[in-house]
Picture (cartoon, rainbow, N blue to C red):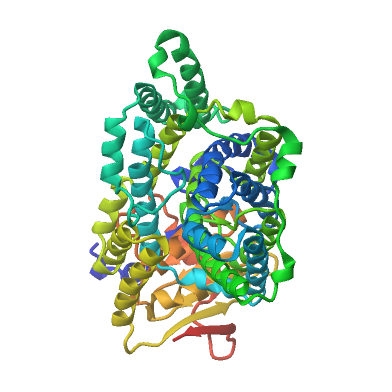
Amino acid sequence: MHEDDDPGAESATHRKTVRASVPPPALAELEPTGDWKKNLKFDVPASVVVFLVALPLCLGIAVASDAPPLSGLIAGIVGGLLVGVLSGSPTAVSGPAAGLTAICVAAIASIGWEAFLLAVFLSGAVQVVFGLVRAGVFAYYFPSSVIKGMLAAIGIILIMKQIPHALGWDRDFEGDLTLLRQGQAGPIDQIQLGLSHLSPGALAIALIGVVLLIVWEQVPALKKLRWLPGPLIVVAFGVLANLAFASIVPGWVLSGDHLVRLPEGGVGELWREISFPDFSRITDGAVLTVALTLAAVASIETLLCIEAMDKLDPYKRSTPTNRELVAQGVGNMVSGLLGGLPLTAVIVRGSANIQAGARSRTSAILHGAWLLVAVVALAFAMNLVPLAALAAILLHVGYKLARIELFKKMFKQGAELWAPFLATIVAVLFLDLLKGVGVGMVVALFFILRANLSTAYFVHRLESSGDREHPTIVIQLSEDLSFLNRASVSRVLHELPNGSSVVLDGSLTSRIHPDVLELIHEFAQTAHTREIDVVLVDLPEMPGGRSRSGSRAEGGRALLARASIAPRANDEPETRSESRG
């Protein structure tokens, strides 16, 4: 019998029902849990990797900021032990940020070190206020294409910046994310300097380190060694290889600037180096100006990082942005009081944390503990680590952020996605992080406004009476969902009760922005972690995505029938409507 002859064919073909709340293959082996003890086998090794990455970054950023090296370590320790506890992000890692170095250099030169510490303290207080007035909502309005472009640009910069370290040229400070600095050698010049000052020992350690990381990911037996991550093996290899060079090929031995340089001298010496803020200048206009500048820039960088980490998180968990601003603010207040640099959530550390397999914020907290132990008791051991070994780790991180597959995927999609993506990359490479994101936002805004010149946007939420213990909730999407609806859709999805059955009905939707569609699919893929049953109705697949085989269409139709999507005149379900214009 032909479809035309089937009385049910019209409704069957009109309504496409997909069972989406089934974990995708990438997550099938993972068991997300709120029990931190069960996550330790993943979080402990990941914390060691982040610690090894963070240690030279803390020192390098402090030196680049014209600040005492200890101040960078203090910021890293506070970022782990305090911000890690207060933050709601399961993957972000906080510490001193390269994006603030220019502000720090100018501020320290103009108002002095102790007054600068006061400005750091006050900037933290301002960030707490930002969180309390719910300024974190701005994070929802960073387009996905801009975030992906920012991550890809950082990956490219990491690769370009770490190649000289892999060659043995260690004059450029670790953690620098500005590719072109006025009056300084560009990336190609730095690589040429590395080639002209080539250190065979550094090159050997870096190359073998990269190979070890690739092998560790590709060999299933090695990949299962959760307690022995590849980056830790690379660091151990680098230390042992450099010690072996002394007796085998003395000319290859790395020393001085080629190694991590942690301050030594014990607790007493470290305590004497700690500075405290000068509160007598609390009414100084110059100090207040620096505080407001630090608060604004640090908050923007943190929100960008949080959005990026949520995008990289395999579970696609949503970080409470207002809580994050409060956590960062408290962290900066304590860092300033103890003589530390201003801190933010940092993309490089967070990316390394996720790639190392971290499951919860315990990893970030432990990385702060390892920094504290290293500063107090293990400086002599950490000073044996070659920067070339750390360069191998960061080269691997950079490749993963800027992998070729990402570019292919973005260019297969419409101009409204690849144009902001490409603009962000180019601008970040040639300007800096914040300016680059700003350029990407302008390009994305052009496409958003062009598509939304004369349309109103609504998200309608209808609740059926259903089973009280296991309610069925129908979210009927409007005719046209733009990027401006992303915040309200995200809030509706994340406020759904655990254990409920949810129908996302797109039968009336003629156009849906890719970011909103991506948000819905990410929610559907991870809804099983909250025991939420999701049915997608008439919603398209993601571009380049694969259809789910084995979808239970009949079960989906039964759920739709139970939800009573079409309300009757004498028995209308409760209706709530949210709108964004």
